[in-house]
Image 1 (cartoon, rainbow over the protein chains, first blue to last red):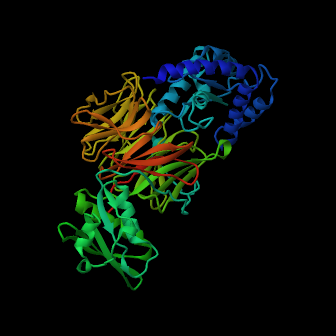
Image 2: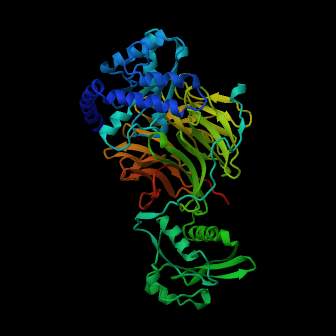
Image 3: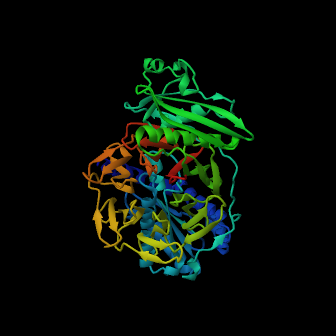
Length: 175
Length: 427
């Protein structure tokens, strides 16, 4: 149908915008906000890691030692392919997980709001598993990784437009 | 298997709120051109806190099959058939007339009503209903059911209920709620409140329980909650996705989609024994199961052919048959109560809309006009379909008649409303 080519070309344009965003403050903010919010809403589960999130989130200068500050990567429409510009982000997380074998991360997969909710749960899982595979190939132990899909249930941005969709198609690293 | 065994959780684990919430209101957006004109005269006798004639008229109008006369057009106000001059009602082109009156009897009311055929000049129905003051709306819905069935031959579904999910606020303040309400959006009650997503409410065939998905542990799990008591059990909490619960018509099994073996597959859980049986096995997403009304097969969504399409799984043979071929996105199928049609979300040129496919001819018709419509749920009499749609940036519920001729919306005062589930018949 008309959707895909249109969405793809828009997504390419948006992904360029995101590269720019990530190199300035936008991407960083988004990443650390997601991380701290997930830490704060956790009750009981993994309370040991909550402190870690706080350290990582506040330690903007910590290069190798802290959790990488960019914790959200974005995807094209109807795709679980990891975009080239996000490979360095994944590699940074892989390095952190290798250096901290006790660290665990939940890979939270999300979709945009189009399509049916239950099917989108499956699509969000595909995205998170694609990140899991990438990390596994880099030698990360499966015991450090967990995949949870939220489908379209927890949008980062509300609204029914391409800009909101592009920001919602994402995987969040939640330590 | 022990840790998956159902565990009755105390109702106080989450906040269960039983207070009345802001009701959904009804706005009729499209009337049917074939609607039957009917005059409903305000009931005589005892003055009541509820306007029964208004409730009945609203019920019948919502069905799309009736067009109640406005009050201004009522030329007289009889309350008994003996006092009716049929010629008057023919003059205002009313095919049917409803008259009645109310009598107080101790602490209850006796509501007497008659349905009259204006052109045939005869009484079609006459009945007395006894109701407590708190049950007057229910009495009106009961009368609507009787009138609807007497004229259309189809059982009325005005005494049923709906369940739906709400979401309000953003970020840390975001809250999700599970609610039930009467079919007209009134008497709403919140039965679950959470800071994590709630999804996929599904009524048990006896209307006593709701199965749903909650992320309250930050992982999706399926719960079964007793509607009356609020007591609930966690039915499935495997690693990965636990989603899309669907009851078998006998209420003994729950179909669902689980990704515990890698990718989402359809499973059947025996509710009494908690035995799980895997039905599908492939590398695709298999989800959104729904039983055919005869219980012999399941319809589900799978993207095994590329995009999502609907398939039927025959429970006796294990054979899978593809049902949809129109377009490249057909999902969340629901079979009509007569087994003859399949309602679904279909992506066409305008976006995602509710469509109906005739299972005999395979002809597919789009019923709604939204761009992001979701979650079709069929009334137990098959006459209407509830779905989720948008108004501005807010999610609201909509309903459309099974033939697409009539539609209405149920906007909420605030927040998003989505994932409607129409209850079975409750009486």
